[in-house]
Length: 298
Image (cartoon, rainbow, N blue to C red; front, side):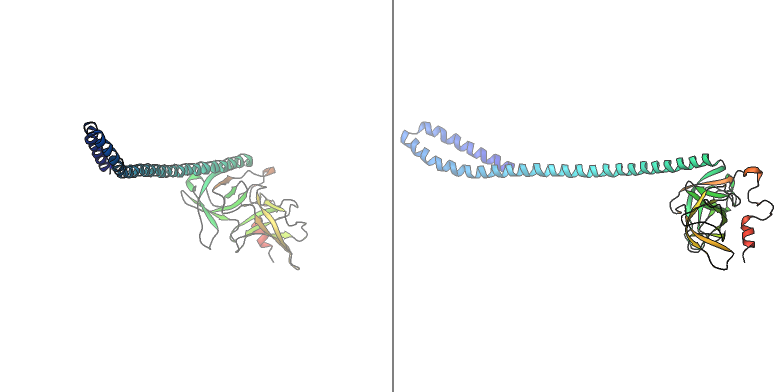
């Protein structure tokens, strides 16, 4: 296309080179005649030249716009890649910030408790319906043994029931096979907190004359189960009082969301209670509160 334009220009220049000398050599009337004849011829020659020039300009503009669009598309792809990279970095930083916040809360709990503990991470959760448990990344080599209590800043998780050299299985308080001693914080009534088949928690063997109410908080009693006194277990959501029964019971909403925690504290050595009382034994009785309450079951 550019060669054809150049050739047309050369033809016009050559024609002018032939005609102009003739204008000076020919007589006046011949020059006048040639001038009158040359005007329409010049117009005819300029038509294709203008058309080619217009097409040339159009092609140049189209090429420039196409090149600009290609550059814009390339910039968009580059910016999209950079945005994805930055978004990934933001997610990593957010995860680190959340992890740091959880670990800080766990450290504050460790310092506040005054008991010997080991921090551990959750490796997995039981996906079957047989048990409600979690697996930790600390085991016998780290000093973790069965019956040790496990907690998070919001409250009680459960108890260690099995260990390997590097892992431990924790039975949650919502499992029917788990039982720990608890006390209604406001009324000081003691009972046994067990899991239910529905995956909830229930406090049993409460006195019939207890003044407990819906909304009361239940905490660990510190008498058995590997937990010190006063750790949150849950909140009373419903009270069952059956005529003729020796005890009443209450349904609890656990203090912990069992799908939301990732780090825990394993209580390796709860501090002895005041007066040197040994953990897990009721004064004047060789049985634990769990055994005593089950022995009183009608």
